Length: 295
Image (tube, rainbow, N blue to C red):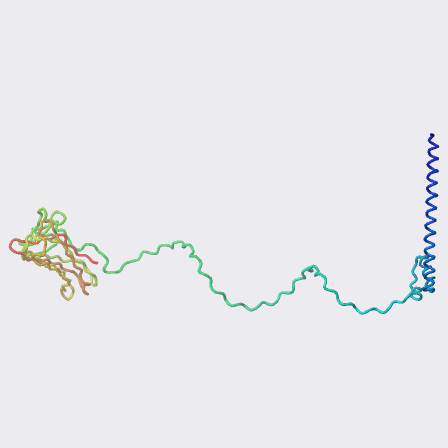
């Protein structure tokens, strides 16, 4: 079959289909027109005065409010307001408004309870050393006041710096076991008196008087005294008395004796220490390491 023949057949088919569609359209329009006519006849029987208005609305597709009000039913009065409906959901919170002006300052509140004490801070730097003080106390320690208290030096059989009114009863002792310290001591027989004057001595001060003693025999006793010398005369302040048979007699055994004076009287210028011995026959007191010092 030729190409032109095919085209002619296609055109004939299209024309046939188009004619059929046209016939269907005409039939549909006729059906609609018949239905509309039936509707108009029904309206003429119900409301003849509104038929014209309905026809105009169909053909013109336009409202005519004045004709509608005249020929159609009028609106009735507005009915009573219905009951308020339930509240709708809460809307979103609006944006925060601008801050208002600052109000006046309120009255000051009461003071609160004091808090706990804080930790102690670090120690500050040490201050500069102050000036050296001066001591005006008349009773400052001046050391040993007895001269040759260890009985190491003798002149003519009498200890140097010491005095005696009984030189025959006083002698140097160097025998082994008869010396407390050093190389010698002093031997005092019955009736011996040995003294030394101590200077300076300050009024109001207390003094310590002490010595070591041994008995060369059982019947030996001694009295040791301290006498303050004032401008108005001597004042005996204290004494140590050791009875016979109370002094140790064993070789190398020395007893230590000590007293503390009362305060030296006013106007005191010096002190005298004195040893007075009592003994049987050739028995004697061995004396060593005599001391006198301020306290």
